[in-house]
Length: 481
Ligand code: FRU
Image 1 (cartoon, rainbow, N blue to C red):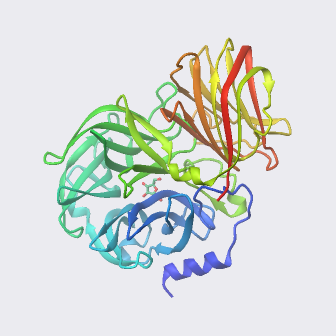
Image 2: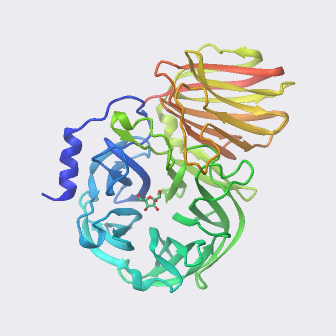
Image 3: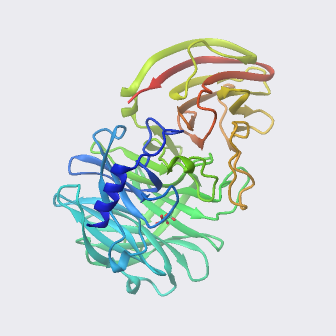
């Protein structure tokens, strides 16, 4: 029996416990999930593959799990696409990407064998079963000063009659870098430059991604061990973006604006696709390395963020959940002009599988915001603090302590600066059983975090301290798939 069949039989026989499982986010059927892979629209459908270890709720020999969708929201489980079953990938089919060519779906992924990381190709005629073609970018294709053991996560895309791939790498002196390769046919590749290298060393650029976004080129990469910078980069590893211009001839990227992609706790390895109608959509792993994996005893770990449409505003990245999600809104509740002094609930606004959007008028308050997942004297708190001019997401009082790598200051509070316009801030929140995604001011900043509160803790309480605030308007919908 093939190793992918073996994985599928195991999945059919196993079931993870329901505890904390999300209802409208992608998760592994059982076992471990990390990075999104092969996120694409191909052969008439959306495809989502992911780093998958079916046999335990812990990282292990990497397979590629697979889901397909018509609308980016409702996903259907497909057979496991890749398993580590060839000498060149015997230690794992690591991250990579997908592209359609001549009515076939190609996967370009990192084949790990011992200390070597090289890039291999697999293809499918039906979008379901994949056949491996072997290594296509190997150690001999590396520039002399690049690591052979840190060469992974190719993101393939098409431009001006060529295929290109950006690949994560490490320079021999320790900086992280992104390498560029070029091909006519996806099988024969040539090195085309090192568009970007980090400042500082002991870093590694994982999961690079390139997309043309409006008038700019966007380069995403997930940087291991990036040092903290004020309220930025507080997690052990950080997904960053850079806008600028990529000169494909010279293989050089000229950066303009850069920042962390998300300012919450659990966001890594984002990957993009372009929809048939031209939108750029990004999805990321909604977890972090080296954390307390609260759901592991229940047989699963890992999920993705919502798919988010990307755009630029004043040169900066803006993220909004794809509009397809709105089809699944149920039970609307709307209200406006609600004064908040101390704590205040709003009729009909509660739940843990829902979208809540509101405009907060800060009034005279020193701190104001919302407590979520409230119950049993526990809560997650999201609020603006006037003194520091930051929005804070505090998950320290949810009943489940999450600790992280010693390189993180903590895994309980995250912060970000936000523009206050006319004394107001817009919040758009998505709660899904054990997750919270926050879009501030129409997606100018986002904060993503897992919250493991008691399962019946569904209270939502607004609050203001040091003065009176106002909920100028609020809308709440259940999200039901
Ligand atoms: C990022 C990463 C990738 C690698 C994969 C292995 O989260 O470390 O660089 O391909 O995970 O599962």
